[in-house]
Structures are given as structure tokens and as C-alpha cells.
Amino acid sequence: MMGHMAGRIGGVSSSALAARFGTPLYAYDGDALRGRYRRFADAFSRRPPLICYALKANPLKALARILAREGAGCDVVSGGELARALAAGFRPDRIVFSGVGKSEDEMRSGLRAGIKAFNVESAAELALLARVAGRFGRPARFAVRINPGIRAGGHAHIVTGVAATKFGVESSEALALYRNAARDRRLRAVGVQCHLGSQILSPEPYRRALAALLRIADAVGPLEHVDLGGGMGVGYDGGAGLSPEALARRLLPALRGRRESLVLEPGRWLAAPVGTLLCRVLFLKSSSRRRFVVVDAGMNDLLRPALYSARHRIAAVRPSRGSLLVDVVGPVCETADYLARGVRLPRLEPGDVLAVLDAGAYGSSMGSQYNSRPRPAEVLIEGRRARLVRRRERLADLTRHEL
Image (tube, rainbow, N blue to C red; front, side, top):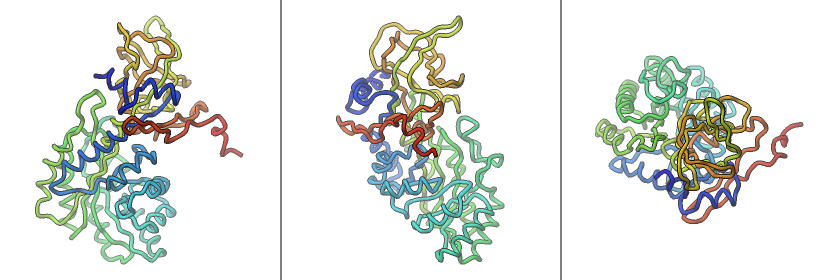
């Protein structure tokens, strides 16, 4: 199965993609992205939520446009992401603006666009939002992000729903913020929000979080929506990941008879499985303790293994017999520059193409030019057609903005 997945992306041969566009190369299956969005929406068809794609997972315009045309909303965390969301065609009234450090300029941009809500994360932020809205002449629609004290997610760096993190406020403070805002004509409370973390594989934490949000909604009066954030996990090991059908079964009964609509913010769940990073073997080397496969993609192209100790499946595109236990490493001058450690791969030769699977989320979006390495090209496959949607950076691009 892995070999088949590595050998084709959508209806196009991985080898052909590598030959035509070069490596490293991010390749995305647009048809699969549509399918995943529709499956998520269908799971909640009895009470459709607003599905706000978390743009930080992958802001590539070609992918964002597909989701905007499907009717998705968008979750943004910066002025840059807001500009990208609008350029991709997301309706402003389906955009929520999250993030712990919004600037005045970003608030003005959100107000000017007419977004659905600012997800507010502190008393100081809410006070600034009121001042900006007062000068703007339009009440700011907001939801308070609460910390429900529910620990969920994978690596410690992606657990966000507890008080020890920088995100959100505790429930008691949230109630005070809502009470103060009710007396301020510059503000309009429209929702309550939380975000538990990332790579969550069980629906149970979401059920508990929804109960916490509904308690806040009952305490502060009528609200338009409850927003459970994102964090829905995928099966990087080849498993199924979080089931949206199971999630719907756990959440929808609690909303029966209530006026609030549901907002969900999946990013990884939609984007990760539809993206593959193709790279080419440069060298094979061995030490007294390890075998290394040196490839032309590194931590600047896919940071997740170095940052989170993430494990992506890697497969050889060219069928080959035999197997060896190897570390797949990149050309960057860091010991942490690896794509996989201790994986079993067929016997390889320089020039062979490898496919790093489930790389559609937090791959390209976290990329950098570290070691002055140009960012890779990106292609979108729809049916049997592949088209370039982000050109490979050239050496001249490395210094383009320097004076």
C-alpha cells in the first residue's frame, strides 16, 4: 500500500513529477482535499457547522481556493493570513481571527474586512480592540478564547488548552470580560471559543470542551456560536486519524435545542494527508553505528521531525528488493536535520526518489531559507493534470529584499 501511495499522487506518477518539476517538491492532491472537506461536512449534515480551515496549516493559494469554493470559512492568525484568505476568496463573514498577539493594524484590517469574529485571548487585547473599534466606528464582533483545563494533543509544543500555556483565559476571567464588554458599545460578544491543541485523535476531549463552552454561553446570555477550534489529528502511521463521524456523534447531542451554531477549525486533518514531499537521494553513507541516506530535502523544507520529533512515513518511489534500517537525513548543517530515523527502506541508489507522506500540513508553511536554501516548488494535481502553483525559489530570491 505504501509503495502504491508513493508511486502516484492523484492520477500522476511521482517519478514523472520529480522529473518534470525537480526536487525537493511539494505535491498536493486537489481531488483528495475536496473529498476530505466533503466528508467532514457530511459527518455533521444533521446540523451543519461553519468549518473554518486553519490557514496556518498550509496557506497555499491553490489549496485555499479549493476550500473557499467548497463553502469553507477560514481561521487566520495574522494580518498576512487575513490578506491571503481574502485573496483566496473566503467570505469575510466566514473568517475568524485567532492569535495571542494581534496588532492595531491587524485589528483594523479585520474590522475593515467585516470578519465574523476576533477570538480574543486577554483583557489587554479586548481593551485594545475596543479602542480600535471606537476609532473605526464599527462594533467589534468577538469571542473569548477560554482555557478549559483539558490536556489533549501530541507533543508538548502543541498542547494549548491548559493554563500553563500563553493561550486564552481561564473561565472566571472570561466571564468578567463578557460582563465588562456588555456595557461597551464598541464591542459585541458573538461567541465563545477554545482550542485544545493539535494532533488530537479522540473525540472525547472535544465533548468535554463543548460542555465547558456551553456553560460559559449559559452564564453570559445569548451568543451566536460556540467555536471548538481545531487540532483534529491524522494517522501519520497510516491509521485513520480522528473520525469526523465519531466527532459528530459526540458533539451534536449537546447542541440539540440550542440556538448557538457550531464552528470548527480543522487544518491538519484537511491538508496533511493530501500533500507529499518528494526528494531525491544524493549519497549513501555508513558509520560504525548507523546507515544514512542523504537526500536533497532538509529541515528547512520539513521542520516537523526536528521540532516535534514527528514521524512521517517515507517510501521509495522505485520498487526495489531487500531492505535496510536507515536514517534519512538532509543537507542542512544541523544534527537535527533529519526526515526519519530508524526506518526500513529498500536498497537505494543515488538519484532514487523518496516520498515523504502526509506532508501537506505544517510542511511548506513552516519552511525557511536556512543555510540559504531556496524554498521548493509546489504543484497541484487534479485528475491527471499537474500544474505548478508555486515556483521554485531562485538563488536571486535569497537576497531580493536585502539592501
